[in-house]
Length: 129
Image (tube, rainbow, N blue to C red; front, side):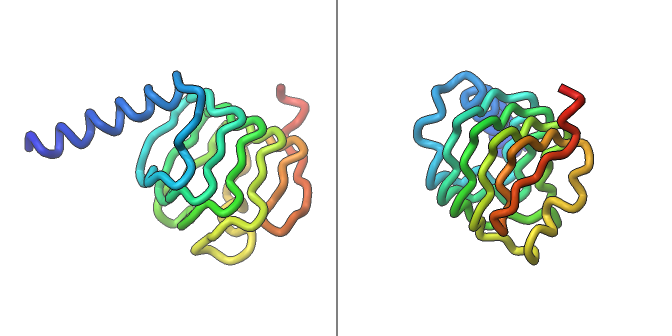
């Protein structure tokens, strides 16, 4: 039980740390199952990071770069609900799902000039902000 509690405390601490940081050092990091709820991650570089099951609900990911991020899948709890994905770059992500399947279920995120895995630009829910 203590080990599980420590793991949970570590995940909460990491969420706080990244929301307060200048976003250096996130590349090549295992962020599996980390919760970034309402975190300010604009300009963050996730290249090479493992984001399997990571939650970005309500996070500000403006200008974030997910190119070459590893193991992205919505089948394992990846979440972008209500996230600000303005100019976020997902081009060339290493996804377990086919093509843009991880984004098909994201109906409530804010897409503005968002670069999708296939290089297309997505603008959706832009009038809400």
